[in-house]
Amino acid sequence: MTLKLGVLALLKAKPGSENELAAFLESGGRIVADEPATRTWYAFQVDDNTFGIFDTFEDEAGRQEHLNGKIPAALGEVGDSLLADAPDIRLTNILAVKDVSY
Image (tube, rainbow, N blue to C red; front, side, top):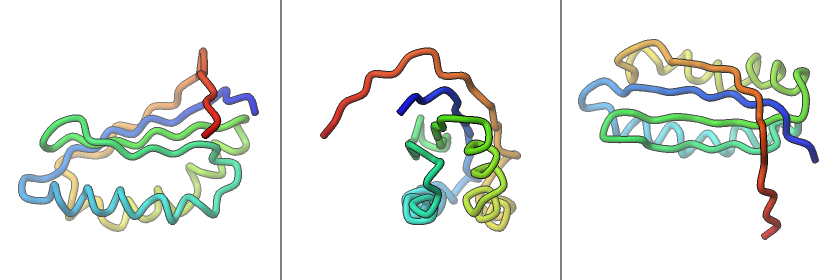
């Protein structure tokens, strides 16, 4: 597996919506499980109201499949009620990976 590409999405919760956004992100793992081209998927919290998602892909086709998939659609459905701002979505190139088998 050669991970070459990523997507970083930073999300700022509306005041009082932090727990709901965290729960939404925790449930995202089940949604993305049906995307074989999404090789890794992380949901994380930076501070009290800033959250994020980081995904990795082997190729652009996989990344585009994800960007047009269920997670962005689900985020679009809840975004107005949970997010203070539009998601800050950045396409990334992966320079190095430490592969650890569990």
